[in-house]
Length: 420
Image (tube, rainbow, N blue to C red; front, side):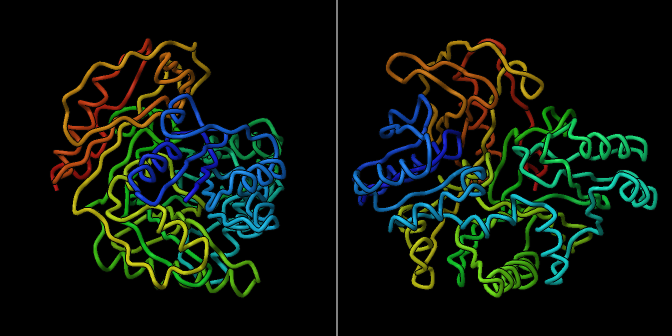
């Protein structure tokens, strides 16, 4: 099988590692990929969807997997399908579950899916009045895509007013913030749950937990994610059952009723409050870094998982996962997430660590000529173990095998589960 992965980050590299284990894989391509994906396959130019679809035809690509949200929201699936290509991901219409937070919240409300009380508006006075009725902290979200950064948790009414004003005036997130969501703050713990969907049927992967804050003890600014682990012991059978019955099944039915069946990854950001679930947000692709800890736990051909979903045949699939735990720790550049960093060489020391590996994201160059840290989230150290603690220790040993100027990473990823 010839497979094309769309994207250039750690998520896509982790998918590539999983696919490389599959004996049915013939050739692997990335568009655009990064410096390290050259060691897994061939990088293609991603200029526009039409030309890439034609290239996929000429390369006899059997399956395309879309990693990031932007191409999905821009309709890459629709274009590829118009060329008769098999592609894993939702249509542009179905991707609105992520590309518009207003659409998503109104969808949740319409289909009685549990979520926080909210107001959607493009009017500052309306937003201010609603904020005034909420007890701080208050959550303010930009409607459009903001690369995982369009959410402000304001600790006071004044901070919430300021966040709302800056979004609506286009100061914070440009056009993505011209319409906003204001919602009540839910005090609990967050989970990431991923359902692989084919429009009608679905399979559930183990729940993961992401660490959004830059610094230890969940301090500092929100980021795209500083690490994750899976499965988390913070989930029980009741939560899984509630997610299936109260969230996934009404979502798939609701999308189907709208003539926009949902195929792809439904990433459910959950808040658990006193044992009850509330949907914080939907994403329509794997989370990053959650994908990096779910892929190595697959105990089955990755191509089978993605291909059966893309061809609407999940009912015949049995998902098998390793009875292990995976922990991933993000190693970021010096100035992340505040501003760009200088590009610096990466030095990888020989390591005898068992059951650990590196996942590469923000890198240029190549394995042969030397990798360059190009900024942002540069790479991850991933560990696989029989317990959270064992996997955590391996992940940090992998991080210690890497050196580049200004590198930073949290020292407490998976802290909530280590003693469970």
